[in-house]
Image (cartoon, rainbow, N blue to C red; front, top):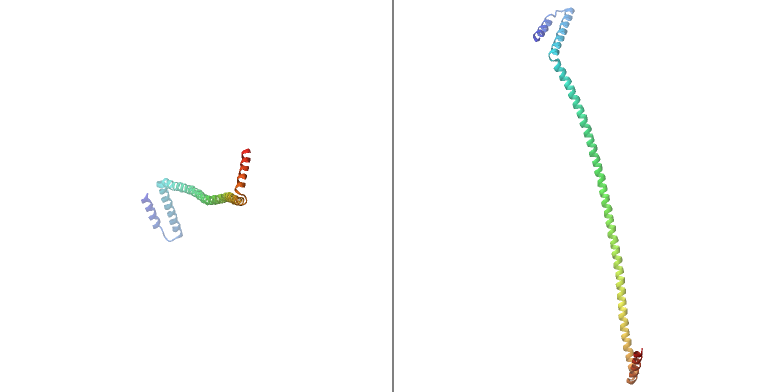
Length: 179
């Protein structure tokens, strides 16, 4: 077949005279030569070529659909990552807010406890000062009573004689015994 094609091509190349009819004849032989060449190639390798191109088309279609699937997956993952980043920012804000609230609650608790402790200390100081005042007053009364008694004894001792003192003591003893 190859030799036939080569011969046809040489025969077509030799016949070129100079006229228009010869040019058309040459053109016709070249077209026949080309048609034979294409027909032989199609007959020998047509199925394989067709399978190659149809297989290649299917492979390209498959790769395109695979790429579209991967692109969709990548976009979905990107959206998930962006959402998780947004959620992280939101979570961080929530954690900061909770920390602020806890700190404020602790501060308020400490202030309340300090105020309660201060109030308790004031009350204890009032009670203690009241008790100390009462003790001081009792001690002062006792001292005054002792001085008054001493003063009264010394006045009585100066005014009353020994005999008058004994009568007075007997009189009070009799009252105490009778009562």
